[in-house]
Length: 230
Image (tube, rainbow, N blue to C red):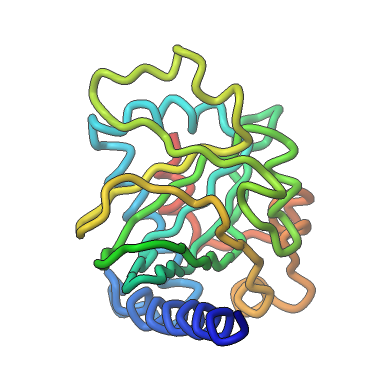
């Protein structure tokens, strides 16, 4: 059991390491810092997915969501054991004005078990629909499926969000995918804040709570991202 546990942890670590340089080079536009690149790539993902007619359910949920997690370049790979990892942002909606906060930075990682083989890159947007879902991830390490429920969002031109999606789960995850997998499941994934990037962009003392809830920090670097929100 110990060797299996060691191998799974090693695989997850390798996936996370692999995701970092991919995130850095993906649509970087010669931006100078990693936080700026992640924001820019997240804006690109939002623009692509919200303009895609296959993601009408995501668009509907996003207009009602309390927050959105955007991972512009999550790497998934598998050989018997599977792993996933990537970096992204979390933004929150003001319940009164409907305006979006500046982004805070997060990393996602996890492992899968069972017979599997393949690899892919995914652009992922997670619509957080409940206070429980938001509180689970905002300022601590959270396991999706345990600390908050997450369901795979339905994709397709004929799918309508009015059928009840967004009521039973804390979060709904949507992926734009190229590779050997189909669909997206984030159960068991761990999400945690990247405090060093928050402080790199906003300055000392920038926390997820201060950025997302108290709104004590802003950056003109986030304008394109917030403008892409529905």
